[in-house]
Length: 322
Image 1 (tube, rainbow, N blue to C red):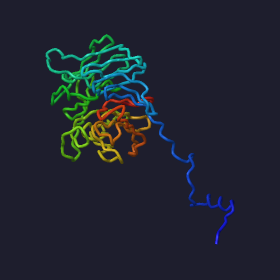
Image 2: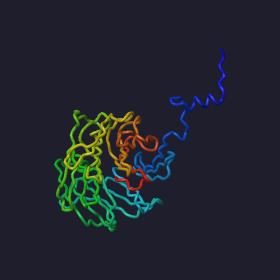
Image 3: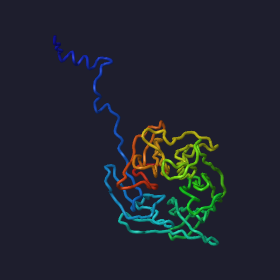
Image 4: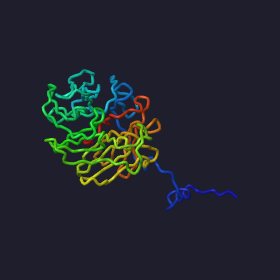
């Protein structure tokens, strides 16, 4: 026996409580708009648009550890182990600073972090020299902060360094496994030492490696500090007393394994953008995650960039902290 239902009955069933009806496009959550990405790897600096296409690029064979698109539209780039370069979109070099051994020191020097300051000077962290300097537009050092370093190494004295709104310096000291805040006189006023998180130390740059080689840190408006753990394979948020307030463990996010955690952005909505270097082609190089630990965007482009993408800036986000 066949049943024939009128259009009215079909409509009634479709809208009846508990009845199944396919969701319309209007009911679906809005698609993430994506982010444009400025980064360095595979012998060049490039901007990749939300459509995945390279919008701009310039040769840069040095494996960069910091990168900035400046408010004036120029780029502040890490173009050699000791060199910070300001370049226009037309690829004209308009400013350059080369770190050299300070007086009384004859060892190697490396630069791993830099920042254009509001007064036009540029902050540069000099590993080997064990100092943070501020350099004016003429390349002259106008301020110097000596760093406390327990395990000196010209490759590991510092990683990411940022001058804070209060005038202090937040310094990631890879070799010491420690984030230290220095005041304007060079006094350590706060520090946080990473631990292994209950896992044994292991060699290697990929997901199999584990240690306390911290890479990045950002001070939040509430006074907490978000830390990109480097080969600690974690993201930590700690309060002023050193207590962990929030974290992402190595394999806590579905489909993502953290390796060498590098880039950090804190977005106005509270989301974090995290850099995941040396994680292999199965993992994204960058991803955006909510405080509920839901991944809402990821960037995986192993054609333009490779497995050593450490320095990246996600563009077009107003008031992001990084």
